[in-house]
Image (cartoon, rainbow, N blue to C red):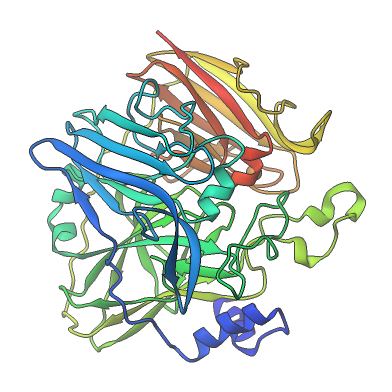
Length: 485
Ligand code: C2O
Ligand code: CU
């Protein structure tokens, strides 16, 4: 199948559910919503301080063409975008007005993991307040990071309710002249399951085992919003997958684009690609060039099969319906309209200077798979173990470099995320990785072995690593990481 055939499949329809046809109609009509894309409120640091009030609560919000009762930060879907610079202090006065306990994780930021910083062991009860306070290190990379709840057992549910927002670190990476001249837009990808009375529903979940996915796919809380590219014919799209389980296989209809940053870090130079797979938790910054005549690009989510529960237990849960991430059709996520085309738009040549990390002092192995667990039933495991809050799973020494071999012996893909410490991918199935990049979340496909190299610097304490299909995390696929001085 090539991309066109997938689009044709999507347009013709395959007799799927009603909501599926609603999404397809959106493609064929080329209808887009009219609200500006960057309508989410923004909080920026000034004089070295980013300070704001943040409230989590359930609210009725506009979502695409309907109203829905969602979990919000400050009433917004997606949550307000936060921006700070290296060296800045951050102070977030947080109030939990949800009916459940919660907390906040600052995904990808290299900040303290203890106290009132990026501490996922904090538990903020309904009605309670907590002030998060930390400093972004002076040498922190600039890039696309994000924040979301992280209370074990409720993470998938609260993200699926809508709680997620961007955290942008502004710095050196933004000073590259070609990027400065480009038009910058943010896309927060979220999917939702909403019934016809606007309530969050469980009915469309593929199943918690597969990881919940919703039938309403949104970018910035809108279905297929339009972006007008006016500035210099060069668009920088900064994209976050904030869905709890859905993978996005991104492509621009009939156009290549340029990959310039992974999870919060620029690549060394732009890489021309036809598509990019974005797992839950991952970010990608891409450059899109206008052309000589005005026109339109649709940003598509191509079909991707991330595994099937049908292959488990002799097919007891069988069938195509159990496969994740829209295996049958391409969906338009956003539409870029460009009008004033510029003759030749310069692409940046050098974006960063990443060096390969030195050889590791320690090598560890992590087998990831599902399995039966006494008292739990079918669960998700790391080295055969179901997550336990008080177990010391992995103890590492500060200022060392480790290689972790992530071995997926299961039938589903698992995106593996480590808190607080970015890493480089060294090899996949023994073949050296060609793209030198910093990541905090890496896809380990079913049957695959991925070797990553992690420097543990600056911060000691206890944090976690886990699968970022958040139902898998809530169902046990997480471990405690203890960094010792
Ligand atoms: Cu975005 Cu521990 O996760
Ligand atoms: Cu998983």
